[in-house]
Length: 272
Ligand code: G
Ligand code: MN
Image (cartoon, rainbow, N blue to C red; front, side, top):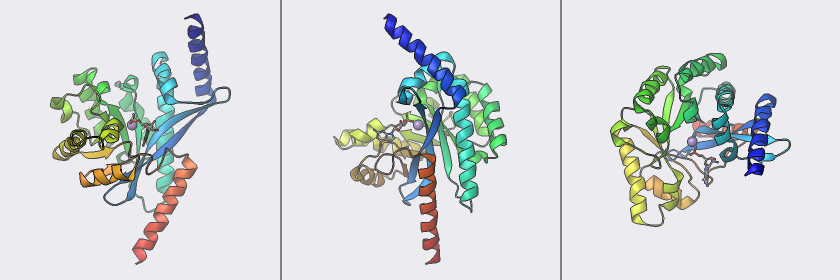
């Protein structure tokens, strides 16, 4: 018990230092338009590369960052860095490709201050609001539904996009789904992984895709790991996907290389 407390305390100290020393890095996982076989955007995922601990997974440090309030400065850094990066990519790969960057929000960031923070970061980084997506889990929204809906509408008024992350795993209420005003539903990777096991599991994915389409929302399947996953999802008319089958989260240099490849391929296409 005691050593556990000390370890926690040490981790908290290290995390505080890490924020001051900028030991974090954003990785970017491609999101693919399955119908057009094209890159549609990236999800930004934070990594902590600690000089003493090595690579620390977000599963380990995000809960602590939330518990200690450090998620606020960390979240600010993530948002700013991802917007800066996307602005730079848009500058580099002209004409503007319409690529979006998605950022995961913790329920702790989901407060009225967020609207002003997002507005300010967009102004500072000059990223056009339409290229920023915020991913929020159902559970974060359901903590206080009325407040969440009001906040989501204020965010939408900035011109940004909203996604419901890990859809189907949380405490979801279909009656609120439309009121959230989200643009995108992300099918949780657990459903994608189970799709091949039975027709009933596949039916769940099918229903989520149909639900999104009927509500005029985009749908992204997460955790596509095999060609067969992709094949099934295409047959179910799923428009977007992400997962190790396409790419793991990439360092920004590698994401830049991928963009360069994509846009030189476009050039060839256009010249035919
Ligand atoms: O909660 P959210 O859906 O944002 O989680 C994204 C996480 O899933 C990231 O940590 C990312 O590295 C991981 N991930 C992305 N694609 C895959 C995949 O194909 N398989 C597995 N197992 N994990 C994935
Ligand atoms: Mn996510």
